[in-house]
Image 1: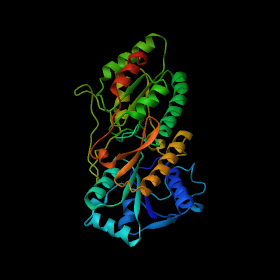
Image 2: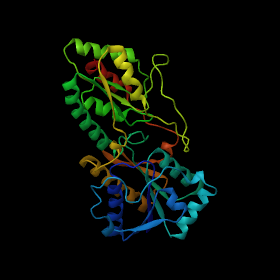
Image 3: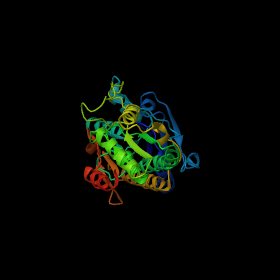
Image 4: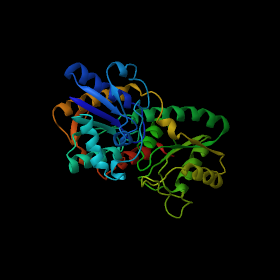
Length: 344
């Protein structure tokens, strides 16, 4: 077969590992040929691509980012975008397209398959771990490890200066990274988008720690977290050109409020895009490889309109349609159980 591959949305560790696995099995087991579209759907619409082979993928397993480049956006943002996508596949003689992406890219893939019968197979990726249908996405565990390492380092400097450190991590609509990294890093409080927070309660936790002689605290906040209405100023939100609400800056509001209400010196650390970069950890390399091999199997089985997912540590298939308009949020019962024991 002749197969196309693209990476869409935000980058994350493990993208190259997926591409490598698809190409390795396809070329060595089935004699397939591969092309990679450059810069996501932009490459599809503008005929920009590169050949992919086992030799061209050497050394890519530990490499972060994506050698194909990536962008946000969709063919549906352009006039005749869906038709131009079909024409591109036909012009290049592609019999299938493997799309490695997050909620946006997989939703686009689902629509292209349902509305245009395009032969698409999806692979879920995002550091936010917010895709419905799968237990985990590759890239998430690496982001958590990076955030945890940073929090571990911040503990010692916070203790040296008797400070509160407010650490902002990615998480537009969900608090997966904040919750996992916060628990693993021994945070005093974790603020997530799924539950508006009352800063007076957070400050009460901080005062109790200081009363026990613990003069340093870490507050981890997801970028999309918001306070309970009327309890403190909320960050201003705008809509970007892709229709997404802009987030971030919540830590810059939380930190001075904590300092004013408690008198404890408070500093802000924004981890931001640091969480996207660098090499994938071993877990994500393994998961990305399993996903890539399973995606190639789905192509050869003609299982178009599906994506590979992880359920109970087994790689299975799920309809791409499960991703449309949905976001997988954290389990608040787990959050509450942990908070009850450790926070404050």
